[in-house]
Length: 334
Image (cartoon, rainbow, N blue to C red):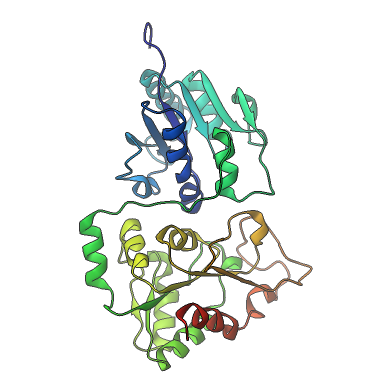
């Protein structure tokens, strides 16, 4: 923008839903760091609803890298649109070469990213990616650092009303059995055993997840009659509103874990092939991480795998349902 001083901050993360949620505290940090300047967030179409209604965001922009912005032509068209907006700075928590190239092509004067990002040379302010920190704290290093704080989601009143209509009036236990990675999914028979035991105790159990998780959830519900299966029936923000009403959440190392942390409820997180030390685990005083800690084959990958490389999946199978039940009962005060 000729003759106009650059102003405002563009935050960028187009990764997985959980990663985008872990970048939300950057919004508040940027608004506090540059008061009076607008803050926008560029993310994927799927993650955009997580940032809607945010009081510190002027606008949520979408990078449809598999749609309208696909390929070199789409990327450079988006870069031109960003250039016209006249941002003073871009801050990217996603270590992707594609987003790095996009920001370099946008001509935004100050471009902050992690030093170990793909195509890091596109950034003119490179920040160390500290593996000793939680992901939220790592992201806050991009704006000078800060203490861990839970992410926030801002559902509308209508979304909260729908959550209230869908869920029981009395306290319930939420179970999120899904993950896109097979080696991050605790065996469904273990989830079924937990759900069945809770139902015998008279507990209300609500199953949550996306449409892809429905087959698993249906089998769990069949094994534990009386469960309320909401998989595929709630939007991202409605799922958050459902979790706000839950007494405790049992989840894999997957997006619902981060959503439960944001909702401020006790989270029991089952870690199979991945490690809490990667920096994504819940860390509230009422949260609990469960794992089989003494397996030499663990971790077998950063994100998880389609199948166990060893063929035994002991990191999931050896973690007994009784351990999860004990953690849930402790958080229920029983």
